[in-house]
Amino acid sequence: MADETTQTDGTAVTAGAEPHGDAQEPERPQVDWKAKYEQAVAESRKWEERSKANRRQADQLKGEADAAKTDADRLKELEGKVAEYETAEQRDAWVKAAAAKYAIPTDILSLVSADSEEAMMDAAKTIGRHIHTGTHGQGSTPRHEAAGQKSREWVDELFAQL
Image (tube, rainbow, N blue to C red; front, side, top):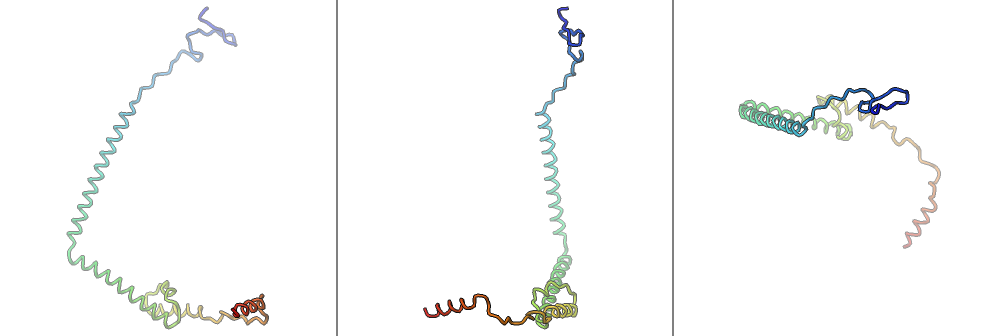
């Protein structure tokens, strides 16, 4: 009984045995992290090369598509741009005319979305009615002197003598 020890509850335990049983943990296989890292880097490089190849191919196809455009396509595209500029110029003329007629700043009228000169004039008329109503400055002139008026007059006289 030299190999046995007694626990506090009176049970005997052999010296070489685990307190929770003889079962030992199975060994975990060693992982080669460096190999896994190198494998991940190689995979990353492979996809990077594929991505670059796809980009080059897409750029080449875009260049071919631009070269394949006919003169008619280019002309149509340019005509569309000219039409946009002419529309913007016409709209600016409507804004200036309405602003002059109803005495409204052009920056206010430029915010109005109108698709015809009549619509712009109607909008300007409505805005002008609200801007030019007679509600501004309807107060009366005060009948008393402003605070500190006498001291201001005295300072004005003092500096007028210099």
